[in-house]
Length: 374
Image 1 (tube, rainbow, N blue to C red):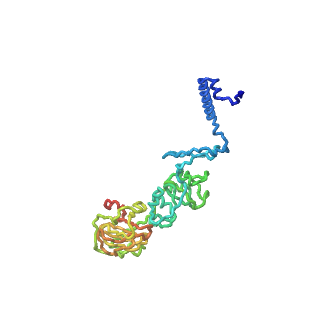
Image 2: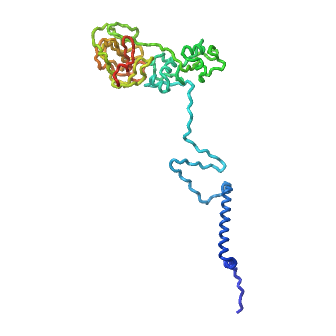
Image 3: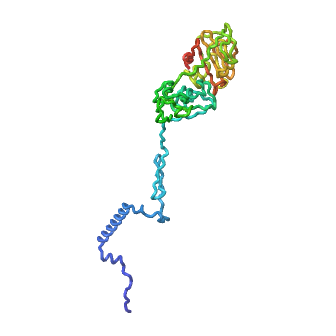
């Protein structure tokens, strides 16, 4: 049998093994790994992956999960595209507050008081009263739904009159001319001089701010009514007693609280309010601060609503007002601590409370100076 030549493909692995020694094979493998590492490093430094077109189809490639932010860590917003920058939202942006220079309004609510409104806007009671002619310098003229003008700072608002000049206004309200002229909210023309008539530059009754301005108030003091005197006050109201009483209970000279609640619910003692607005709920009993004789019992025409006045026979009188009802009658002797009426909100009042005044021989001292410590 004749022999047939072997035509099978040569074994490449065997050929390499025959031509290259094992030591040389290991050397070439190391070189290949080094070249691959250098190429990968170069591609990363040149940001070649970041320059791959966005239209490249990555379907089928594994997607890396978005890391979950740990507690307190900020999440990094993912850009909508590789060419768009997205600003991270800051939910703690602080908006700076600036001093107010404009005049705003406030609608009186049930239960409001002048002092409470003043405190709400960080102003003095006088600023609110003097800036609102509707109040007529009387803190008891406050009514629900009244619209009050609220100045930006302490002082008062002035309605420009025909002959007003800055010099006259500054003198009348005891301030410097420059404080009025330079107040930014007044928006005076640059050409305005202190001696110029304001109506030549603005309309009459234009409202301007007088920073730090003040003035005297209209006094509406209620005269004490003594038991021996007959009808001493004109138009006091139907609650005034005829008077001419003799004898009866006399005060001890020391006073008790007229209410069991011993705190202010509204306006305290000021030059514009010569008494205390004491907290009292509707129908709460009101007590005589000291023994005496009733000289007023019923409706008053002074804005006090239903009112009771006692003459204590020693120079002192006390006044209790805004009752829902009075429980005593004219000429009656009452003892210290006896109920004289029930708290209410009659007269000029925005909510139930007791307005309490003390009078000694015509002067009206602060009751807090004569009542026991709460």
